[in-house]
Length: 466
Ligand SMILES: [Zn+2]
Image (cartoon, rainbow, N blue to C red; front, side):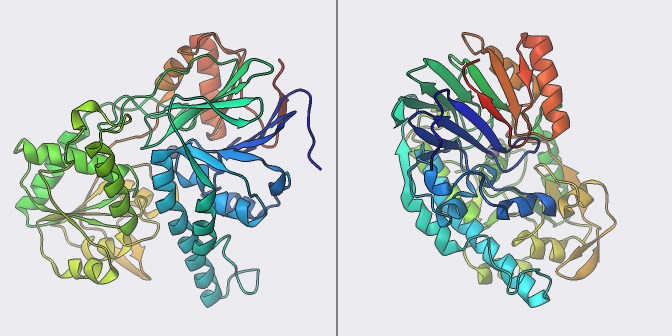
């Protein structure tokens, strides 16, 4: 039985007290909406939460609204559908295109993990099962329904949703849920991007918000704003002089595009030589097609200077689509650049490139994203002298450099964004961050913007009439 509260309620299911698994439930007298449907990622205790019973019957949810296509915001959808959710999933067109790439890949990874656990015999379940399969993921894509930016859309009687640009990745949005019978605006930030994104327009202002729910991934941090181009140019030039290869572990969606944009600019200016650039990740290649098509058609999310343009046109770009082409790269001599996933070198084709190139001091490894503790990327960043790849330890002789390129707003940017809310929210719920980051952002929102900000506990349920 559905509980139908007379007062609208929010329940913080996931992304509370942690940076993944984003899921918040809105209950109103007319139904139930889930805002984001993310997968818990990271250490085992978190990942096990993906297997827990969902706190409400999935079939009782009327609709899901998605802020963007990152797995920690949409990766639980196939599981929710498998458990009985049959309603629509509303998202922007960019998000739909990327979700169609990301979710089947996620299903495939879950299947591979289960198969590996069975081979090694380390699963508690016998046999180990995937959380969902590629087929489950493909099946749930039928539930996606596209909405336009800036156009209020009724997701339930009495609940109108408006998606506004968040400038984080293509399609990413903040969502304003207008509870029409109470005339209250409840705004979810989603993941907020930065005004420095080279291809995407910056985040839109909050608009009116009575209640604001904001992410806090970098709530305790101020980004270093040094231009990454300088480090990139030095790394590429040095490797080119030595006849070496620059290996770039990069997140397949968005980060690959940012790296290519910088390289394109450097080649165009003659700052670095025009080396062959290989994008060796099927998911990255498909995402690349989406970004290129959106620029060509003049998407309102893309900066106007790229409308109608062919992105990365200065690069000798080569995309490898199958495993054979990927392995053939091992036979190639530098100088060249290989961009491959995963971004933290935890899996994927980047492993064989690193295994093959990391012990040669002519080569360089360029880290371009967040490296979670315990990953190979993190070990490299901290100067590991040897590292295990594909079952063997390899000495690290290649030069390792880190380039900062965050797709997330920092503390100052999150506070500035919250300040654009007009009228000022009665309360701000700070979630989607590690506890220290969330607490630091809540303090800053209070001190710098005079906002009442609190960090909800996992599972906490709050009324929306205060
Ligand atoms: Zn994100």
